[in-house]
Image (tube, rainbow, N blue to C red; front, side):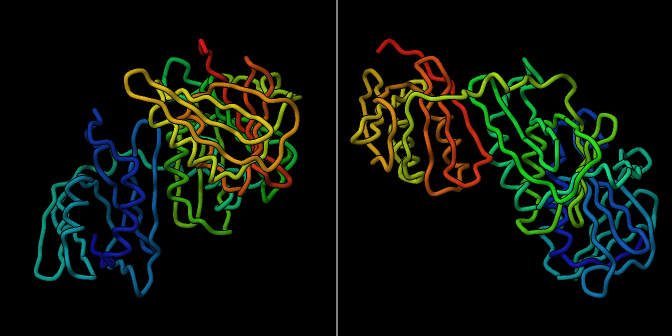
Length: 375
């Protein structure tokens, strides 16, 4: 291997693949980054037990020149720290001795002991029927993951609830997540049409990483499923994730089909009020009281104090209502909403509260199960 690469391009690649590196991985080679210098590109790959990330830099006159091909696995931590300390704009990689990478930058020269790339698990380069690949706008997918994945469970007691369900049918995908207390659902349109419906379940923590790496632009991400793996391809990025086995619970009977009362409020104003009252909320429990005058928010913790705030109503239908919710969960939902106004529907004392961003046509829905209190 002998290459010249710009420091900016290299750091950009590392920022992507390092998301898959685990510092305490029991498999030593997975603590490294695989570097493959090919004729027309250089490929960086990192992997853990559930996700692999690959980032490609094409050969051109500005950011990369490949003089000799080759590959090596280098320790991710030390490689990243060394690269960030270098000051020259162009960095040279060279392998003269087996499994020794020489890094040259200006007057600096570093030799890193590497590992055998033949032992590293690379992205599966299978070819799949393009008619079976979902294509979704980058910005849309990025925003949708942010809205939905927050409702997934972080407990491994029910593994299917740690994932986000992708349910494709008729040129649209419904992304759904729930931890049993809250639920988020959003339907988005694909840029292509598949021959049949399909459903798969992706770990929410892996989806979070995908969303952070996607560009906020109008290019498309391809989503390809085969066997127990899903692959995301977007520009120079490829991410391969394991799928979660099991059946995701049906939400058909969970979403209330009618409601007793509904209020429309300003999203930002409500978020600030919920954040305020949650500060003193014991176990994050806050109380909402809707009247024709305003939406009041209250919380109290013994020996600490109490707080109340109110948000003006823009609209109200139905009777007054009062209900207790987990304030932290409510904050997560409101922070993910990008509409100016939000509708809150009361469906009964023991039934989920429905939260809908005021966007037409509305394709996003959130539920929060109320908390039983003595008051």
